[in-house]
Structure formats: structure tokens, C-alpha cells
Image 1 (cartoon, rainbow, N blue to C red):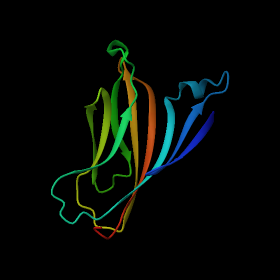
Image 2 (cartoon, rainbow, N blue to C red):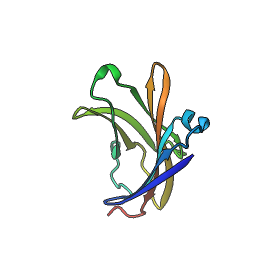
Image 3 (cartoon, helix red, strand yellow):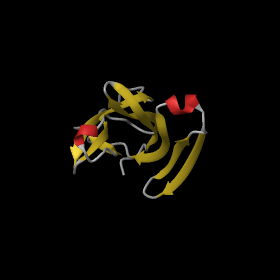
Image 4 (cartoon, rainbow, N blue to C red):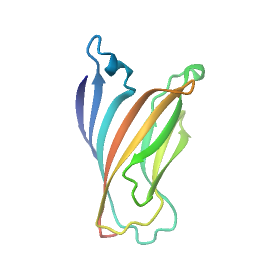
Length: 143
């Protein structure tokens, strides 16, 4: 199994690795993981935390034709030790979006790495999976 990685330096630093299987590598072909990404986000300590804060938007690419469209299931599988985050599914501008929210106040300094999964399910089976590792740093300051 080979992974090709792309680095994007924008508002947040992102590294995305894409799987590439060698010919006749059955275990690679059967592994549903297609991409693994790492990104970093910095947050302040929210002084007046009264409602969930939307911090990350995961856009899922789906086919144009609904008959071929997979059900996309978003999940936080690791790193949510204090249950400070959740992920909800929304439909925005014709796209399926997973919205990661901070649902509990966090007083910094604090660091967590959330492992997020986007599972594309067809006929009850995961056809492929994209993993996003989000490194979250919360400052002790509110500004």
C-alpha cells in the first residue's frame, strides 16, 4: 500500500494522504480507507460559552445522481475524552457536511487530537472511509 501526501498551507495547515494500491494487493484494495488527513486548529477559551460553537466543516463529495448516492455517516472515533465535541450532519448547497461543534466549555491551555471518520455506506456496507485527524489547541486566553 502506498500513500501520496499533499501539503496545503492556507488558513489551517493541512496534510492529506491518498491511498494508492499496488497491482494484486488485495488487502489494500479491501481496506476501505481512501484518505487520511491531518489538520490543525487553534481556539480561544470561550468566556461566555452559552451554546455549541461550530468549529470544523467536513464537506463530503457525493455523486450527482441520488440513486447512486451513498449514505454518509460522520463519527468521532478517538480523542473526545471529555465529550467536549460532537459532530452533526447537515445539507448545505447540495452537499453533505459534517459539522464538528464544541459542546462544552474548555478552559485552556488544552490540546486534543480528534479522529473523525466520514463513512460512505451503500447497502449497509462501508464502501470507503476518509479519516481526518484534527489537532485542536485551546489557548488559555479568550482573545
